[in-house]
Image (cartoon, rainbow, N blue to C red; front, side):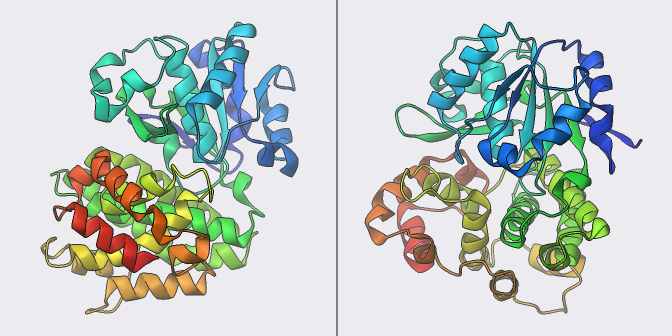
Length: 376
């Protein structure tokens, strides 16, 4: 079994979930709360988790995670955590269950309101090492949340914010590509583009972190080489392995911060209607933001293109647009149900988002308004 220690302890291998009992024992978790969603339960994937648990079944399971985690859902999961006198969490699913589990782990050991811990409200310093232990088991190759130091959540006041702290990084990440075999093509494509956007945006971030840059370039190369095959051949084991590794690497580079793609997708993700998939949003927003940032990143576009095996002189924005089309993803936000009526609110939220600070080109209200207009 391959063990990686970088930010946290990572099991990465086909069948890695079978060692779950060892991870629970190592963390001293005897009564875990499993946080997942109803899609995972309906798909039958939850049976793989039950089989790996010491008792053969999860005694305490919260499956009402919404597609975009909310403070309300975190309170409901916290109530079950306390009712079961749980001592840790297992997050099983995509980024939403993993982020929700991080919020529950925080609320279980701190004041049970999330607003004080929002990064934009100075919450970083309020989060201590008392956070309950989490084991994160991703079932998609996209968010990198299993090694991320942030949880995205919509607060009761309607704001979608990031709760950020090294203390909420899961204590164990169990990355088993076998769990992604058979994932539908559209979901494979959307989550894969999410992972690619992480690698690209963190690489373009102006913060100096050469090790993270190297990881981001490697992740982008793996994803570009495998995303189309993984999306068209759901049982291709090597493509699934590469996609999960690329997603993991995207998560490992979050330390550099993201950029305007994520500032905008975080804002749009706060909409109640339509409910928008984060990875699909990133896919649509990536080309216009790449055009916006051109000329402000030195030779990084050329280095990205080389790492991804693209011909010299490739226009990255045009390439991503073509990739989205081949993957069957929308070209515009309007195809996802977004209308121009939301532009003022989304512009304001993007401008206040924490990812704006690490975009390589300073973005103003007018810039975000123009990017949204172009994208719709």
